[in-house]
Length: 266
Image 1 (cartoon, rainbow, N blue to C red):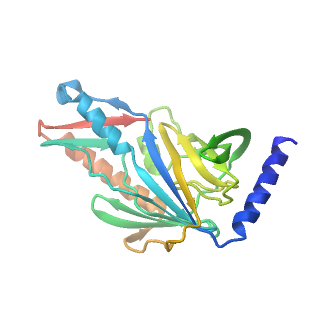
Image 2: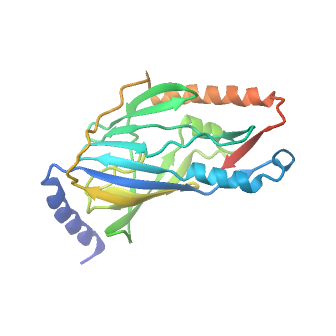
Image 3: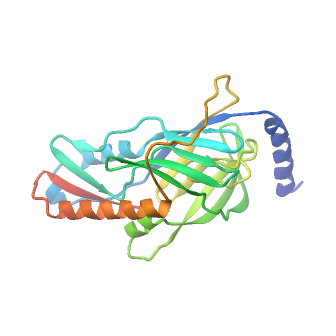
């Protein structure tokens, strides 16, 4: 039996098992990021090790994806405070805070609640079209058999603004999904595969599922967030880019000897 037939059989039997029920699941994801950091040694002095440890903690986060057949909520389990070291100030270029993300895969839309410099926004827009290329590669993540998929993912306006001089406009995303959980969903904005995405990697970031709970007795209500100024994704990107440019300009003229800037590349 070839790989495609095996995959089809697996999907059929898994779908019968789960879709026959009014099921709900919770997947826990952990994020990691390889850091390419440029620091001015004249400013940071002997604090490199402390800064590296602080930034490693900042980028290692835990998220939960609560999902059913068509709806999901993706949110951080614990919000970490912005990095700081005593009286010193650390500016991390390229970071944008993302809050609770609601996705409706049936209607192909999403609502993301995001705090930008103390102001709450409600970003409502359509899910991006996906053009996944399915591969025959397999591996196990926990007890689940996962299949590989890749696609070229377009950078948004803010990411393009932060991109290097290479003119890069896309990044290659590698996903590992399992048809054993036949939900076309995954962490953050990613979805569109014939099974739940359990691992994602792109640029310097990896998102790995550490736990999946299906059909727990205690079920959560999955609803879109409602608080915040309503904007489209393009409107939010423009506001964020403007605010970041204003912030960088402000600190370019800052005379505080205790402040310094860290450029994070990926």
